[in-house]
Length: 287
Image (cartoon, rainbow, N blue to C red; front, side, top):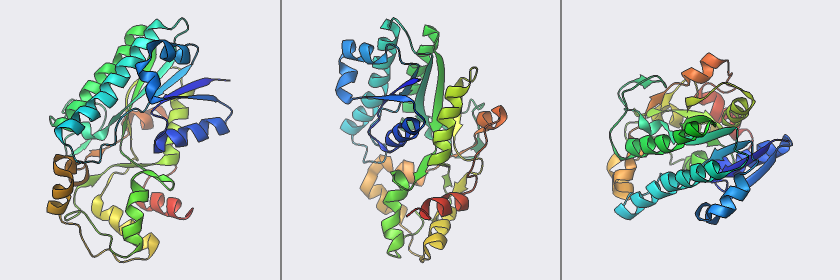
């Protein structure tokens, strides 16, 4: 029985991963927030674990005050640093470390895959760069290391979709601004499968975009939601309102990226849900 240890396990993706792997008879251990600041306890948890999954990080969709920016940084960089240091001290080190990043590392002017070297230079992109650099230090410990750059994860039990549904069901959902901003997404089932795929592989490592093969726009997402729910989508949310609510953090909603999962596709991974319409219809049929 493989032992999988997950940091940041209490969030939407972490909860889904625990349920998924436990249903497949893996032994899953969740790292609590307090464990990250207790080196001896962390070493004890990680020692003998075959796979470590790092999901730690405060919610990015928030108003980015200076204090919250510090939290975004510490919850990602410092927690990853603690995991690396603990793994280094293990007598029986993990064989695989899967850390997290985001497609927000890319610019928003064209479609990007993992081979690009043209990365953005704003707060979110630089946060991702530092996060990835810290995680890749596991390579120096001879631990196979993968970094998953998430698009927006869509699932029926939480995450972004759950927050969108109420206004759309009330008939007051609409685009953010003109809706032209890119929207790279992944169905939660494909995300879970990608984790298992990486665990079962012996050779894959490095950067992977966890996005569907068909990035879309906020407009197409809005229309897919309206059609599936049979509700109108004629009331756009002006960008200035989003900016008033979230300040600099509004960029996550108003300034999307188009990313392709080239490396997963090239390795033979098959997505079950490639389009936004397939994804939304699948998820809303469960509700």
